[in-house]
Image: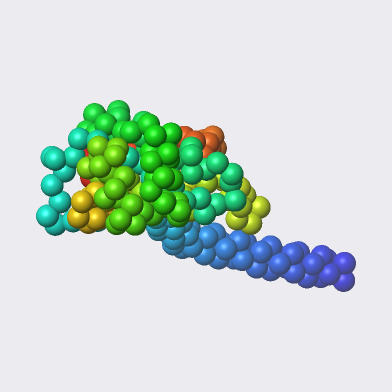
Length: 223
């Protein structure tokens, strides 16, 4: 009886061990099947987010625009649509520096522009009326105005993460015809998918503004 019971116990153990081994082999085969699918899915998500993060400026150039006659421009006070006080002034400084760096136009000093515009009845930052543009252009001796608005400047928060973000719209307006020669809108964030994956440090809002303005003017002057 003892031998019979031992043989039964041994047989039961072999059956249990065999069933466990079969389950392990099945799980291994399932993981082998799922791994390539999971990898393909992860790669698709990665590249989708990467290319979305690399979107460039949205821009327009008038079909008959001829910039060769423009020697000097005046930058009209920008409209600040953000909660960051002084954001418009920071972006205006970046725009002026980039225009001068490219050596395409001269830029009238901000204080002189503000004085003349105020005397001509300028009221709304981010825009300029045709009447004010005509009169101010003669006094400032400019051929065009750069007007703009700042939609985002500072730190944005999504879920549990935070990152700097800058969004700007710019226009180049002919002083005489009041025609929009060029306009562009662009938004950049201080962190990308690659930054988050590899732990690269975030850029500041001021650094972003410089990159953003360069990319916007590339649509007008070329890189």
